[in-house]
Amino acid sequence: MATDAFGRFVDYLRISVTDRCNLRCLYCMPAQGVAWKDRSEILTLDEIVRFAAAAASEGISKVRLTGGEPLIRPGIVDLVRRLRGVNGIDSVAITTNGTLLPRLAGDLAGAGLDGVNVSLVSLDPATYSNVTRGGSLAGALAGIEAALAAGIPTIKLNVVVMRSLDQNLLSVARMTIDRPVHVRFIEYMPVGGGDDCRGPGDGAGAWSRSERVPSSEILARLGAGASAAGLGSLAPAPVDRAPVSWGPARYYQFAGAAGTVGVVSALSRPFCDACNRLRLTADGKLRTCLFSDDELDVRHVLRHGTDAGLPPIILAGLALKPESHGMRVGTLRGMSQIGG
Ligand code: SAM
Image (tube, rainbow, N blue to C red; front, top):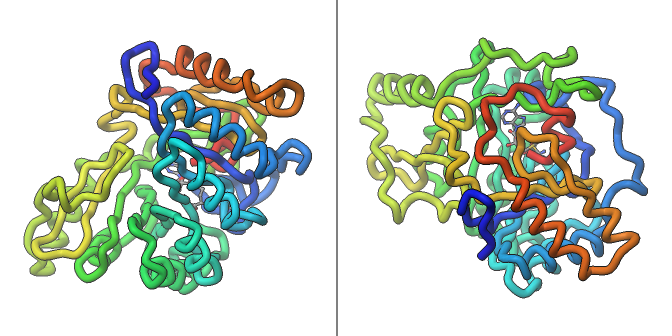
C-alpha cells in the first residue's frame, strides 16, 4: 500500500473518462461556455488501463470512473471489464447521473462493476429539471431501478444540498427504507470559478458561501422531518450496515431500513486526515487533491515515454499531496473538468 508524505494510505484512484456531460447541473457546470477538451487530448481506453495498471503496482486497489458523465463514453463497459482484470484492482465503481443506466446497468454488472453512485438532487420533477437544466427525474429513477435489478452490489445516491433549492431531503432519505441504497447528502463545495473556468452557476466564481448547508443542519432537518412523519430517529448505522466505503461519509439509519443515510461534510468537518485518493483527469493530469491545482502530466508519459515512467509520477503525486484542502475556495478547473 502506498503512503503519502503525511503517512496516509492512498489506495483509491478516481479516473475521469470524459469532460462532457448530458446534463448541466447548476452546482457543477455553467449552462454554456464550457471549453470542451479536443478529443485528441482525452486519454484513450488503452491509456487509462495502462495508467491504472501502474497505479495498482503502487498500491491503488480501488478505482472510480467519473466525468463529465462517464456513461456517455463509448466503450465504458469494456473499460470496466478491463480495469476489473488489472492485477491488484479489487473494486471498480462509477459515479453517474444514472440516465443511461436503463440501457447499460446489466452489461456493467456483467463486466464486474462493484458499485454505482447516482446523483439525485431532488425527487420533485420540476426541481430536478431546474437543477439539472432539463434532465428528467423519471430517467434518473429508472436508472436507479435498473441498477438494483441488475444486482450491482453497492448503490449510493448522491444529493448535493444547496440552501436556495427546494429540496425535500426527507423524501430522498425515505428511499432507504425499502431499498438497499445509501443516500448521501453532500455539502456544496467551492470547486471551479478560477481564472479560466466559469464555475458552477452562470457566472465566473458563482459559488456562494451562503448556499452551503453544513451536515449538522442537514441531519437536524432530517431528524425533525422524520419524527414529524413518524419515522423515528436516525441513529448511527451499525458498521456492518454501512456500505463498504472508501470514502468519508458518516452513515445513519432509520430503524429497520434496508439502506442508510449518510452525510459528506468536506467543509464543515473536513476529512483530509483520512484522504486516501488521487485523481486522473480525462485529459491525463494527475491531481492530488480536489481543491489543489497542482497537476502532473501523465498523458505526456503515456504518449512519449514508456510505462516504466508511470510509477515515478504516482510517487511524485503522493509526495505532492497536500496535508489538507485548507478551506480553499475556487479551482482553475470546474468539477466536471476534474471529475467529481
Ligand atoms: N455526471 C456524473 C454525476 O452527475 O454524478 C459524474 C460527475 S459529477 C461531477 C460527480 C459528483 O460530483 C456528483 O455526485 C455531483 O453531485 C458532485 N458535484 C458536482 N459539483 C459539486 C459541488 N459544487 N459540490 C459538491 N458536489 C458536487
